[in-house]
Amino acid sequence: MDLTSVSRMARSIEKEHFVQRVFGEEEQQLFAQRAGRAAQSAAANFAAKEAFLKAAGTGLGGFALRDIQALRLESGAPVYRFSGTALEYMQTHHLAAHLSLSHEGDMAAAVCILECLPV
Image 1: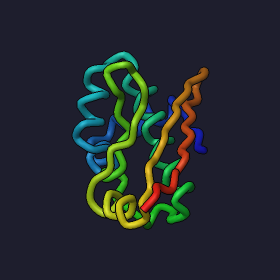
Image 2: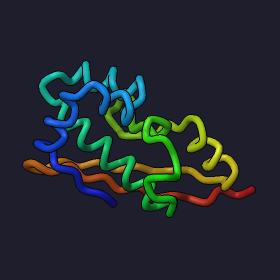
Image 3: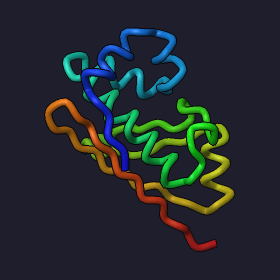
Image 4: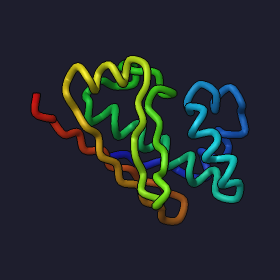
């Protein structure tokens, strides 16, 4: 689980280099579509990345944050999409990741559950 401040994220996403380093292309498109709620979505996505890193037990040095994307299905349900070393980790360890997001006031929360798949 992780919590992220929406107001702090609003300041962070004003910096293009931060956005490029932390968020994948599909996440950036999601934020552009949610112009009025971009900071809220970015905060939730950042919390999702941190929650995954905690669940995986790798810490920040484990993967590039851009390789862990939190996207939304057409229904609005959040899902992870992995690439690069994060995808390799998921495949090697036979894992599925489940994601839940929530917002309240200035906080965005994410919960990640890693499930071991049968081999």
